[in-house]
Length: 371
Image (cartoon, rainbow, N blue to C red):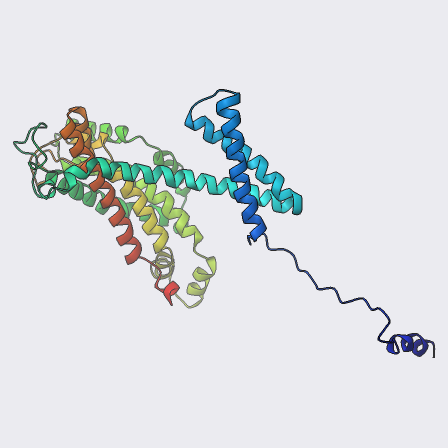
């Protein structure tokens, strides 16, 4: 009776009696969702901080310089933006917005620096790249003062392709094999090999060139040639492939290895059929990083081969030019036309690296992700 007496007044409440409306349930706010208020806070912080720095930096403090202005603008922007966001948001959201703003600024600086370098190189070298003879002729008999419609960089392109190709044929199997040894075999000397690989990753290119010059050219009497350059390139490329390949192999889940072993596969069958195919994207990235370093070497061909102005396909018996060495020799002449050819060669070098990266990523991409 007590329970019924308590419930009955609630059931017999008249229409005139006030009742509390049900409150809508509000879930936790999603941090990474930008509302209209967030966008207005961002735009207002940018505009107000720019105005404050413009007045204080140039008129009150009487400073000058674009770099200092941008740095002060960034610091004042963080202060103003953090204040605006903290008015209607909790502290974790304020910290997230400030960290996100810092990361976006850092990414913008990196992309801007890379973009301006590429654009500047192509703009400066477009006068040479626009001529077809720049790709189909060599510089034999052409002086640095000759017009751009004479001569070209064919000998440097062919030399770069041959030297990097030989270096890849040597360094890729050895680098991946070393990564497999450190990750899958884990023998007694794996820790020593890992230490040597990590120390050789930062090996200066000039030391590799001098090592090959002393061993192959001075001691064994090999001539300066493209093979000597490729050997020095391989010395610098193998540690990069081994170190990055080790990281790629460690990312492969251990469950795949256990499942392969449970099905009766041998250890090497598991490595060749399961581990390596699963890590091919990372191994391709390791190869690209090593090739990007090898293809841009200047000291190595300068020491182990020397510049040549004629086209040659023989990497064993005579000097062989390359694009980085051509760029260096063109700049040392201090002639405007030669420097323009150097910028054109740099644009070709950037294009070759980009094409290599895109082709390898397309060939070795994961087909299962597309499904």
